[in-house]
Length: 131
Image 1 (tube, rainbow, N blue to C red):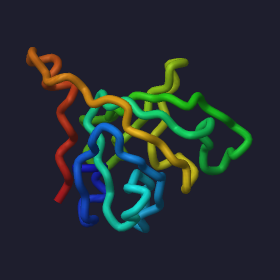
Image 2: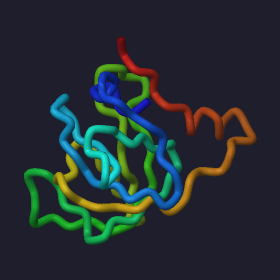
Image 3: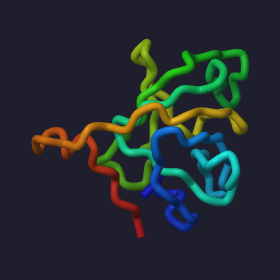
Image 4: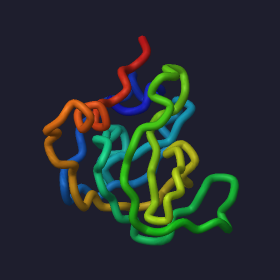
C-alpha cells in the first residue's frame, strides 16, 4: 500500500525500469504514477532506488534543487495519521514525497533485496493503511 492518503486510489507495485511521474492525486498528498497511467499510484518498497531525469524540485521552494538519485523509505511509522513515504538522497537529506513538485520524471533503478533477517524485514515493512 502507498501512503495512507492514497488508500482509496487504484495502486500497483513498482518494478525495475518503471518510468514514474510525480502526481497530486487530489487526496492531500503527492506520490508516483506511471507516466502512461496517471490514475494509478505506483507504490515503492522501502529500499527501492530511483533516479530523476533532472534535479528534484520541492513544492513551495522551486529554487531548491536536490540530487537526482534517491532511496525510498518510510518515516514516522509509529504515527498512523502522518505521511510516511519519503526519499533519502545521497547527501543524507530526507524529503516526504508529498513535498515533491508535480510532473517530475523518475526511473526505478533497483528494488531492495529480499530480507534475510527480522531487522531487514522490519525496515522493508510498509506502514499499514488507516481505515
